[in-house]
Image (cartoon, rainbow, N blue to C red; front, side, top):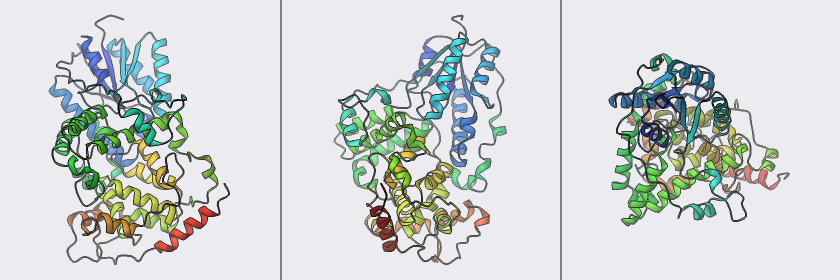
Amino acid sequence: MSETSPIIIWLRRDLRLSDHPALTAACQSGRPVIPLFIHDEQSEALGAAPKFRLGLALECLSETLEDKGSRLILRREGDALKVLRDVIEETGAGAVYWSRLYDPAAKDRDSRIKEALKDDGIDACSYSGHLMFGPWTVETKTGGYYKVFTPYWKSVRGRDVAEPLSTPSNISTPKSWPKSDSLDDWAMDAEMQRGRDVVRPFARVGAAAAQSRLGAFMANIVEDYDDSRDRPGEDGTSAMSEHLTYGEITPMQCWHAGQRAMQEGKRGAETFLKELAWREFAYHLMHHSPRIVDKNWREEWDAFPWNEDERRAEVLAWKQGRTGVPFVDAAMRELQVTGRMHNRGRMIVASYLTKHLMCHWRIGQKWFEEHLIDWDPANNAMGWQWAAGSGPDASPFFRVFNPETQLDRFDKDGDYTRRWIAEGRTNPSEDALAYFEAIPQSWKMSPDDDYPDPIVDLSEGRERALDAYRNREF
């Protein structure tokens, strides 16, 4: 291929210009660069909230590229290889670069495409960027993979992490651009229905927003992060998960910011670095044991008597935030209004579903897949299996979080529940009322309803779960 032929940058979960190895390599070649996003089967299969948030990220990146004199080409067809071949034919491109992904479906697709493009005589190159450590590069002393986080953390915490790359000063453009779809025509917000306008103000979109939030976190929050991250009524977390999901910021950028904070003596910085490593650990596990995505990681848990019927009344009550347990209900309503849920809330609702209600973790995992704007395939799978007890490095099944004592410990003043629960309050908050604007009308819920009694007594639910665990047949 000619040294002047364009390079296609196939964008997926790397929607930024800074610290982008694939884009940097393309720009340094001096050849024309064609940024391309393909709305293929895998992005089409996303749940309503992550698909909606992906659309916002694409809109923001498109504007950023236009400011740089470039543009984002959008194509929607079922098969990514066909689209790539079509764009190659239209433009005479001689290379396709992309950032690696690590979930099983993406790995299978990308391997197939790389082999096919190379057979076509096209230079097909994949680059790092989504993770700090390639999952295959972290091994135990015996050559296996880590199944427990603490030794994994000890293995990676002293590793050199690549310094973030700067934004390319110039993105060369082709003589003519290939045709592009209109993002509006994709209607990526359609499945959100009523919830779209409620959730939108809570989304922080784009690389600039990510950098601004990271800076504010390091300046004002990280010092007390050890404690503040557990208090759902406060703005005490980094809020980076949303940006990391879509590649609007890289873990390397976050890591080096955390390292600087630690050198400055900020107490919570190392805990923040551990949280970044926890994300890496989830991908490490998914790479080495892909069954974690949709099956019990511990196969013996296949025999555990979890309920798998999503039509049961208690499952609907959990989804609706009508369990009668304030911490659970507040967290489930936060999810509907913001598209996010505080990490402490995630642990509580997951423990309640899988233990107090004895429901399979897959029910909750699928609900999160549909409603989280920061949905991540590895972290969602590991988080649910951690809570259920069926995964690696899991919380033991006999550890049953008590939502009442947890609420008293982490929301003693009731700020969190007041913000999200309207029933029984004279002057509910705007966020509590927004919940009723976001949910399906078919639920027929109103802020004037009485707040429900608990659907399961917490002590009885705990004992039922422990009895099932004691009597298990594995």
